Length: 266
Image (cartoon, rainbow, N blue to C red; front, side, top):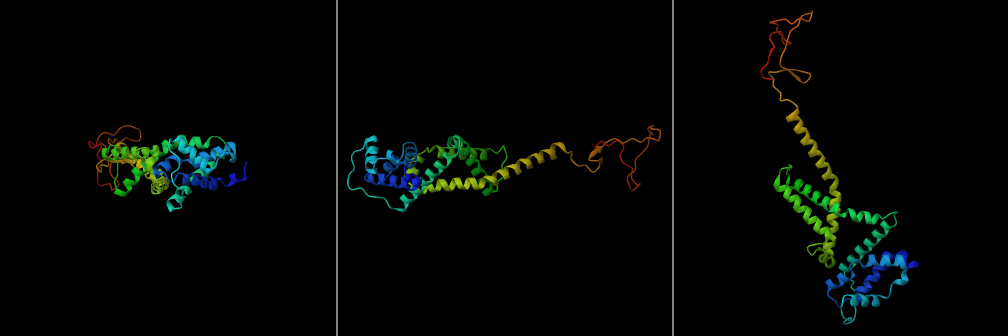
C-alpha cells in the first residue's frame, strides 16, 4: 500500500477538490450531486485496491461526466478556494476519518450504528419536545392532546431530516450553512439528552407519588382515631380476663375527653 494512504483524510479530500475543479463549468448543485460522498467512496476503493486504482482527477471527472450523460468540459477549469468550499472539504475529511475509525474496530461497528440511526432520529425529536416544554414552562400530561401532536410533528421532522427527504439532501449538498446547522442540531440534542431523561424520570416519579397519595393513602380526618398510620374506627374495652366491658370508654391523653367508640366518619 502506498505511503500516501497514511494521509488519506487530507490527500483524498485534495483529490476530490481537483475533481470538482474539473467540473467547475457545471452548476454548483450538479457538482455537489456528482461528488457527494466521493471522499468516503474513494477511501474504500483505496483500501481495497491501493492508491494505483485512482486515475487522474481529469480522467475521473470525465468518467463522472460520462456516467451522468453530460458533455465535455466547457472553458478552463478553476479551483474553488472559498471559505464555503474549504468548510465542505473539512467536513468531508472528518466524515472519512470517522468511517475509517469505525472500520478499525472488530466487527461491523459502522453497520451496527447505521441500523440504529432511525432510533436516534426519534430520540432527537423527543429531546426537542422536552426542551420545548422547558422553554415554555409547560407541564405536559399523557392526555394533553396538543403536546402529543407537537411530539408527532417533532418525530416526523426529525425522521425526514435523517432520511434527507423534503429536499434536505439537495440543500445539504449546496449549502455549508445547512450542513453546519445539522451538526449543531445533533450536538445540541446529545448535550440536552441527559437533562431530558432526568426530567422525564422526575415526572414519572412525581406522577406515581400523586397516584399513591390520592389512591392509596387515605385522606386525613382529624375526627378519626389513628394508630401507626391506620384508622381505628371501632374501639372496645376489655378487662384483665379478656372479657369485653360493656359501656366502657377510652379517654384521650388528657383524661378529659372520651374518644369515639364507633366512629361513623371512617
